[in-house]
Length: 138
Image 1 (cartoon, rainbow, N blue to C red):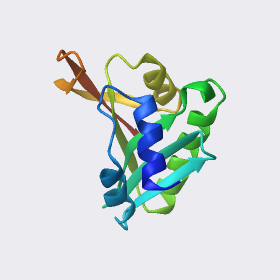
Image 2: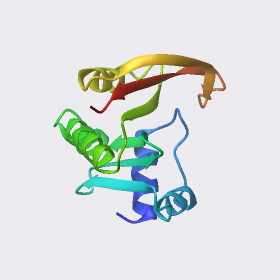
Image 3: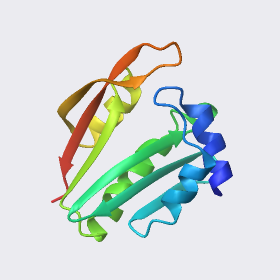
Image 4: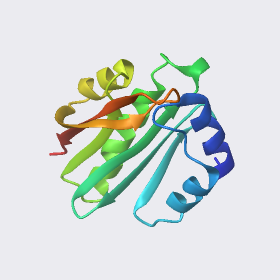
């Protein structure tokens, strides 16, 4: 997927946190520590691994392709790639009200590590916490 395609899919999937721009994706894709995993044109995951830690930067699944296991498949691939890149643990942050994503991450062994109160701003201006989650990659 091109940065423009990634940005377009991201915009279809997110309002909180705000969707990323084509320029943001271009920047990440030039980072040698970042890696992109895709499932056709329906889903992608962007991760990064450095200094023994991996971070799931974003995971997007097209609305019409949800509940088909694409997110679970990408998450499993992320964990595998993180281990290959020498990561001993993986981190992510997720909006507090994103119950589907939180359930997916918990099912793959991620646990809440902390909260960032009022971290994300919704389109209506209200704020919501980010949940920081972590799991070991042993």
